[in-house]
Length: 171
Image 1 (cartoon, helix red, strand yellow):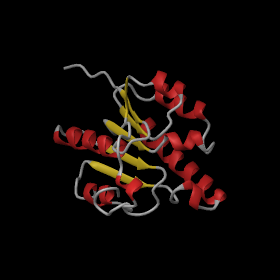
Image 2 (cartoon, helix red, strand yellow):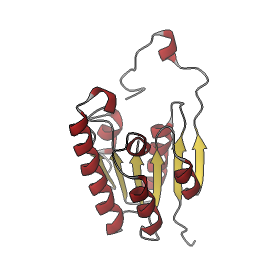
Image 3 (tube, one colour):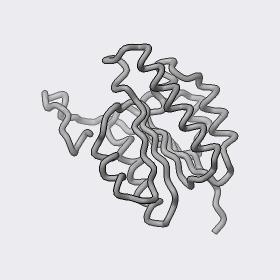
C-alpha cells in the first residue's frame, strides 16, 4: 500500500489531545513504525514518557520547562527553541515514520516560535514522515495545513468540581 504522509492535528479545549496522539503512537508501533515524540511544555518525566521508554521503536523527548505561565519567560523561550531545533533535526533526518509534536500550538500562542517556521517544516518535511500535532487553540493556518483535524470539546471535567490532576490520568 502506498504511503501518503499525513499531518494530523488534535486541538481544542477538551482533555484528550495527547492521549489521542499516544494512541496513534501505539497503533504505529504495532505496525513496526519508527516514532519520535517531542513534548514542548511538560518539563518532567510523565506517565507517557515512562511507558514509551520500554518501546524500542519510540524516541521520546520531554523538552519543556513546565507550563509557560509558571516559569521564567527566558527559560521557557530557551526550552522552546531547544525543542524546536530537535523537532527540525528529527523530522528533516527522515529516520522516523511518525513524529508527534505534543503541545506545539503553545509555541505559536505564546510567541515562542514563529508560526511560519512550523508551517514551513510541515510543508517541506520528507514525504514519508507522518506528523501528529497537539495543543489548544490551533491557528487557522495550522488547521488549513493539516490533513485531519479533530477538536476536543470539554463537556465536563472533574477540575471544575475541585478535583486536582491525578497521576496516571492527566499526567
